[in-house]
Image 1 (cartoon, rainbow, N blue to C red):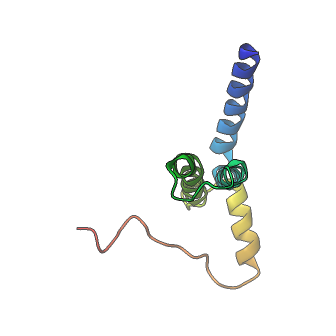
Image 2: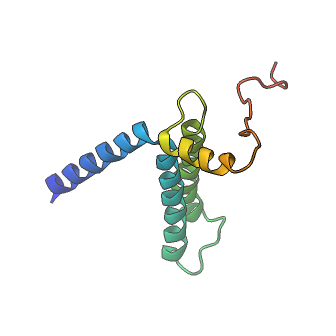
Length: 116
């Protein structure tokens, strides 16, 4: 059983790593969905009288759910950046912005006027 679990985890990890390399924005969306799913399961499985301030509830929520959502959003952002935009993000942008004559929105996060 331990060997089977180890092999399953390694294979799934390798597949998801490949997805992350090829379509990072899609991987990010999957990561956000898993983070939300972990949060929902955490809420459903918590005893009825557990308060949202209870460490037994807050720590798993912070360490798993919030972290996954933040990482997922970061992966969506990185997969949608111009220099190395993944093909799915490129297609989504092309579909949404081709119909309107506006240019694609761009936020320059590299140069922050407040830093410094």
